[in-house]
Length: 126
Image 1 (cartoon, one colour):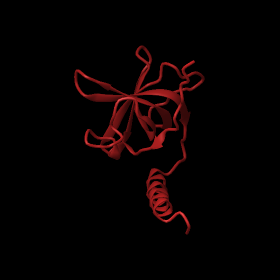
Image 2 (cartoon, one colour; image 1 turned 30 degrees about the horizontal axis):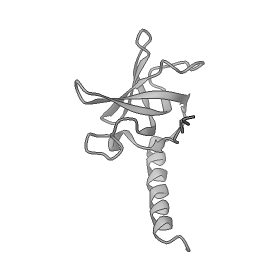
Image 3 (cartoon, helix red, strand yellow; image 1 turned 120 degrees about the horizontal axis):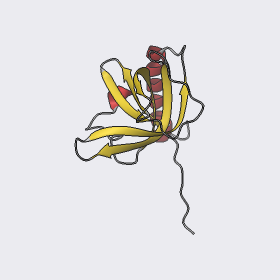
């Protein structure tokens, strides 16, 4: 019997999610955060932004989540890369409103977390 393992979403900023990024690959499990710029009910596609960077998020599998343009949301899901235009769309399996989060502090804490992890992986005894 085949088992399907659900991977945790790698913390990624929208700035890091570009075509040359190691995170930009088919099926990559990601956690992204951004401000809702647009939501289309008919297609269940949300567009989140962080600065000048943006990502489309397919929210068709999410329930009990109300979308409000201008609010900040965090999504966990798998990246689907459309072959016709090489555009990444996150197929969300989890979503939540995170209004009140300071995105600048969030980015700083993410950098500190990565520094800690890099140091810990290189020096596990310390």
